[in-house]
Image (cartoon, rainbow, N blue to C red):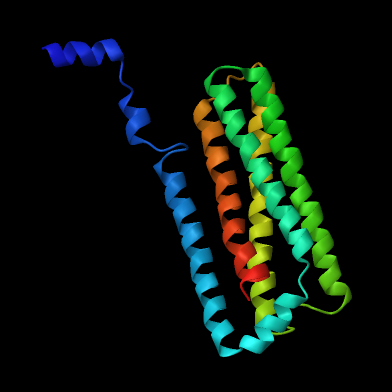
Length: 199
């Protein structure tokens, strides 16, 4: 009886405890995406041992400066997304909107920088069929590029819904968008060292 009373007084939210941000289905999708990228990275490492000199030479021509800048860009964007979720949970909608807008703006700059890097490769003829390393480079970074676009579209739609005061927003939607965006961060943190640094 005493335990029941304490539970009622504390108003424990069992749903919040048992369900991850965005819902379990979203996290299953995220885990599958990370697993897919993990398999591709395993293939990259395998072929690296098959052709170490080729991979070393190919890595040397990548623009590590742009890769490093994009890493900082995505981490900064992820930080603002986490801040946005925090503000919305505190019902500080104004600062939440500002933080989410910063997330989208900074995230968009990742695409611009990456596109510039792609143009560098294409201008010197380093395409998908150049060698095995660049096959992995284009497939992995291209797949991630698409994920970033999807993430930005999702966040933009959520932000539009929030700014439309006629329709109430749900914190679960914001958490789901944030979880997907952080997945993009995580995948890039795996790709950057594997493609730009290790080899």
